[in-house]
Image 1: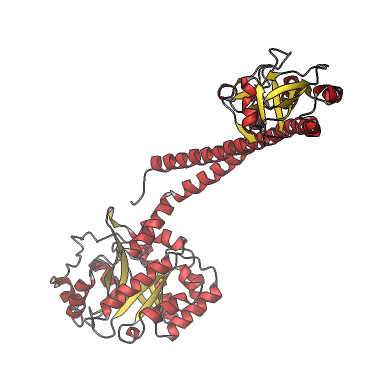
Image 2: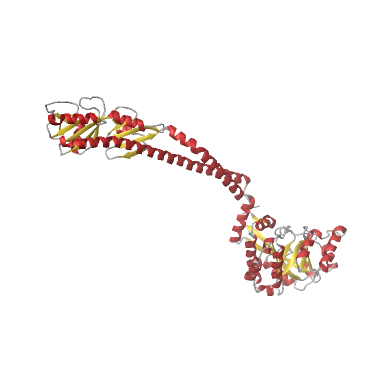
Length: 546
């Protein structure tokens, strides 16, 4: 039997389910990460905008004070003091001339101040617009943001924005979504975690979002509560979705790996690889011993499983529509065999049709295209087994009528094996009736079976149908059929299913010989005698090969 173990089926299904669930959860986690990044992006923009409003307001004030640069301090001291007092955010405002601070908003003096710029402010004269300082003149150990508006290379207006305002802004932006926020200029940072300046490398370690402004950068990190909140919101959605997807994929995988589906794929692959072969069981004329034809039977030579029984793959091929392609493949093999012209003219080749073949004219077209004019020399007989339930009787009648119109006779196979016997005889016009082997008497004393078989024979004769008896295995059965004028028979008494190379000499040897000759023939095939039956290539069950 061609199939994988149930363990493999469950194992692969479990792996698919697990993988599907993990993939969905991975997408869920990525969604959480993206959502977190989106929230952090919004928070970072809010933080940057809040700080920019402070810096821009202060810069505007300093820009308005540039007209006082270079003037005597006693002339502008009052105005400078008012500006520093009334303007928000400033700790102090200074006028700078020739690299020195000479006038302040926090001091009223008639004498000019001569204060060199502290070292941390020197970069302002080199082009920097803003720097963080840990302290300012007259206010120690309190960080501030030094903002400079130059009027020349050595002159300008210097303002100190109190770090308290910046810290409060950082704290106001910080919420439950954020672990910390930071404002960075150069190598120094002011964070929401403290009021002192810190090294930027230390303060912003672990930053998840950083945005650059003209004078500074803002950084922040999300809090664990943000992640937990996002997971709590998205987890039920993705868990439910993942479970549905995993279950659906699991069902599909389990079905895909089922024995029937696995067999179906193997059949399709076998057709492509030409693994299916045709064997022929001779049909004998009882009165003369002539071999007048043969029934074409398919055998599957699987490269791993070896010879596969027809009843193991034919029902699967029939149930999934693959029987159409399999029949085409067999028709090509039969065509290639009989086109050699080695068989006697008029030799009949019987092929089995499935119910699927009777739903449309596909089989008629296939026979016409593949077999063509060979039917004039080696007529085909289409056998329809009784075990099929024909769904569309009207279409089936049309198909059978079209076959007969083209010179292809029809036969009702396995008559009596199912409950459709009489109904099919009423609905369809058959040329042949094939008696199932179950209704052939096994012994001389088998009265019940004899009576049933006699009734079948009488019915066929009254309907003008030729009779073919299947499964003839003993001389007693052959004599019984001959006494009742049954025309044809096939079975192991005469020959097992044989290859075409064996069929040709068999048919030639039995083109006109009597039954005695049949029993003595041994050149190509050994007939089956009642006392010593020969094992067939593959047992033929109710599921006949196509």
